[in-house]
Length: 165
Image 1 (cartoon, rainbow, N blue to C red):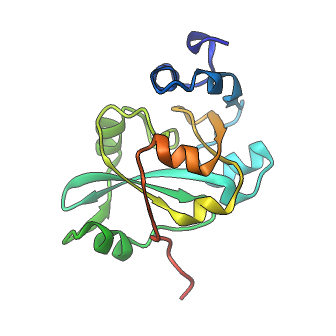
Image 2 (cartoon, rainbow, N blue to C red):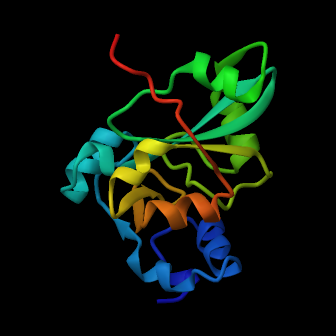
């Protein structure tokens, strides 16, 4: 399957080609129902919620940062703030997410973004042999080993998962 025939967003399919990951294009799965949330994606794929890789954009002192988190966990903003040495970390608004990544919330892939951002990848992703991430649309996902995903996202491995209080 070529990038132009892929169920992935064309920009994301092109990013796979640029990264030498063209073989992944054939592994992208498209679903008739949205996989916008981690719960929707896990149900569609038939995997554990924690096998979904969420790509979340935050603003650290106004600068966008991508956090890759397993689907069963929440990001602890205080841990992100400390990791980045920022004064304030907030969830980015939808327009900032689209401007930064080139993709809409619910379809943001872990790499292939419009602009280069700092990437933090939570260590919890390494608990699985394979994780599933958005392929640029709320209807398409792709599988990848966590180590490869973090490497291609140019992510820094961190512990920013919210722990049960």
